[in-house]
Length: 200
Length: 196
Image (cartoon, rainbow over all chains, first blue to last red; front, top):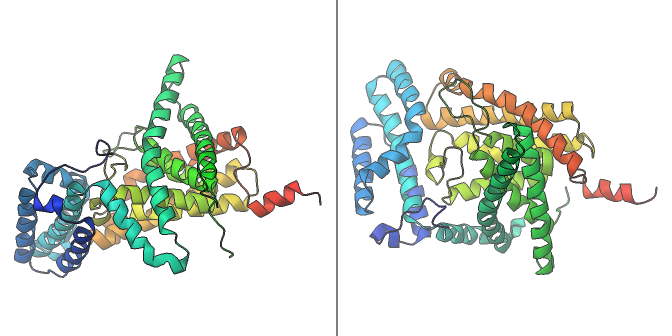
């Protein structure tokens, strides 16, 4: 799972802190950062987050990579705020966005997927009166984690078969057999679950 | 609405389709001369609703979003983790389950067999109208963009997604032809089987 996930193994205090605590702190930090309205506190928060990356033993390159998906919207936003509200507002808006994304990515980078799944299942327990079965949530999350590589492998097989028959890359000739094969896989999976008493 | 139990077959279909949406995110489907990668991921959202129906389509994408949130890099371009939910594309990602649910609900209204034209309309309403409304709202809220600027930033993507609306309907028709019996409520199916 670590091969597929975004988790970066490590032994820093951030890696060893419990996942639930990290999620809670992320939530609190998220609420706190949004309340900042001056450029300097925002820049200070940005520096603090970058220091957290150093504590976690992650290189500045990793931190920068987390911001790359923001480049396009960040540029548009900065320009928009610069024109509409001046440079101070532009720094605050783009800075807060960067802090939030970096913090959330930090939790993902330092917490195992399994630990976050457990946190989700624990978080679902109080929802029982609403008809949410926490154990089923955990089961379907585990099934989903397993199904991703299975379907990706099926996609590779379908693509190979398509190439062997000399078909051009048509989306229809790719997606239809992929989904039909996936549905057959789901049937087998459903039978296996029923045989293990999931429906009882 | 009475609460329907999710059977093990439903669980299996939901989990598998979350995998299908992830696999389609890896495929560069349509290449258009625009500066953003257009992958088949939103095709997966439309197909989940069109193939599985409202309830299972919604759950499949809910699972997909949960897998992204717990740190699997399943979004197009290998993105994932909680950072996505703090970023400007949060509106799009959180809308995925509701778009699939709406498409599925509309397709189910069309009866137990899939109609190409009606399916395309459903994809247009769920996959373009609802998806972009939520996505634009998310960009306005997170990035403090004006509505006009957010719409302009999204305009590139609509072109590719309009192609996918039609592709998804054609693919869904092919799937339903090869694998009948996925649509229609259990009640409707029971009515079909029992002699009137």
